[in-house]
Every structure is written in structure tokens, then in C-alpha cells.
Length: 145
Image (tube, rainbow, N blue to C red; front, side):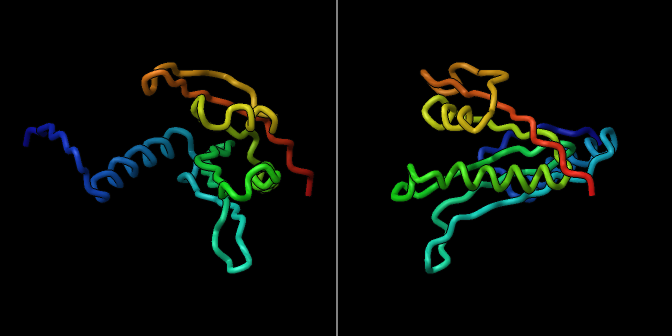
């Protein structure tokens, strides 16, 4: 059978999962690491509803910060910094060595820099007039057990 190429403007979750599994299987064979693992830390109101949180992905020796959000009514109260610090502390305690994040020019670069992240790359014009920044931070080594 000869494979054919099909562009799909609305790909199924199953097809996307197959591609992701293929990449993970290859990465595991080469790097010897387990698949990426999600981890999250959440800010909840008195009813238990999420009003903020940070979502990360652990893989290899790194924590990738995928999303950090705090409800607009609660911003400016250091909740974001606390959430990020909790996630970083968890990762460091598990032996992860660094954290990295992507943020757009209109999002949170100054916030991440105040948390100790350093710029290591940028991609201009990801959308007209906007730049995507890549930042990293070394995590403290886990204390000996």
C-alpha cells in the first residue's frame, strides 16, 4: 500500500492522539524517559470553584509551564506567583532541574522575569505585531533524603 497525504481542517482527537503517541514512543526510545505527565496547582474559592491555577507538564528533567491564570478579580494579590512557586517547588522536590515557559508580548513576560525566569529566545510576528518569548529558570536541587 502506498500512503497518501490528507489535510484535515478539523482533525479527530483520535488522529491527533495517534500522532502524539508516535512522538512520545520515539522520544522514549531515544531519551529513555517516561511519557510527559501533567501536574496542576489550583486556587479555589469558598465553594471549591477554580478561580486560578497553573498547569505544567513534567518530562525528562524539566517542568514546562503550559498555562497560568488567575481570575481578574483576584489579580495583583500575588496568587499567580504563589501558584507558580508551588508548582516549581513540587517539580524541584521530584528531582526536576529546570522550568520553562512561552509567553506572548501582551501576556506575562515581566511577571515571569520577576519570578526569576530568563529570556532565551523569541519569535517575532507569530501574529501580526506580536512576539512569542521563551523563558527558563533553573530549579533548586532537591535536598538529599
